[in-house]
Length: 288
Image 1 (cartoon, one colour):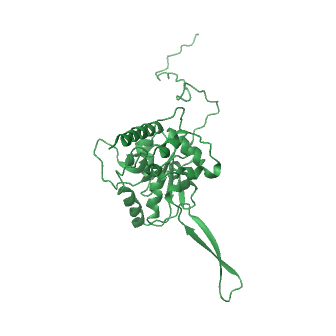
Image 2 (tube, rainbow, N blue to C red):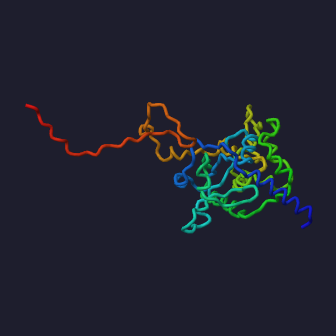
Image 3 (tube, rainbow, N blue to C red):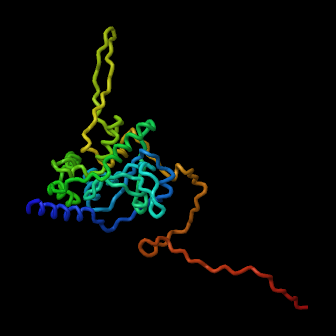
C-alpha cells in the first residue's frame, strides 16, 4: 500500500468514526422491548430505527423522515446462538463495518417500526433472507472521502428536490453503506415492490371505443432508497407490537392529577407512604 493510500485510509476511518458517534439529547418516546419485538417479528420483516448518530441526523434531514436506519429480520437463519449471547437475528449494513448481524437488544433504547411485506411466500422470504445472509462480512471501500465527508453536515444546504439524490452521489463503495440499499436489493431478488416508478399508458384495443389503462412498474435503482421508503410503501404493512398483543384501552390506569416531573429521565415522582400493619383492634372500655 502506498503512502497516499494509507493516508486516505486513515482519513476515511477518522470520518467514519465521527459519523458513527452518538449525538446528545436523544430521548426515545416509546423505546422498544426486545422480548416483545421477538414475539411479533416475522422473517422478512424490515425494522426501522430512529438513530441518534451524526450520520442518522443527516439521513433524517435529507429524507425528511424520522427513520434513519433499516435492518432485515432473519429469524433463526444463522442458527441457535450460544447460551451466553443474544440471537443475532438482524442483518444490517453499517458505515465502517459493512454487512453485519446484530441482536434485537441493540435497539432496546430506540424508537422502532416494523414494516411487513404482504403476500410473500415462505420460499420468497427465504430468498430475500439468503441474499442478505450471503453478504455478511462484505466490507465497503471507505477511501472515497467525498462520499463520507458530505454526511458531516447535519443539515447540508441542498434544495428539497435534490436531497434524495445526495444519498446516491459519488462512485465509491461508501454510497452503499446506506442500510436500505442492501434490503432493497434483497427484495428486488424476488421482484417485490417497495416504491416503484409507475408508468401509466393507454392501450387502444381493436373493436373497443375506449382506451384501457395499463400500469407498468419500473424498479428504481437501489441506491435511491432510504429507510422511510419502507414506511411509505403501500406494499408493506405497519405492525404495532402493542396492538398485535391485544391492546385494550379499558385496562389502562389513568390519573387525573397532573404529572410531577422529577430529575431528567426519571419521569414522575410518586411518594410511597408506609401502610400500617393490620392487627387486632384494642378493646375500648366504656365509661360508666
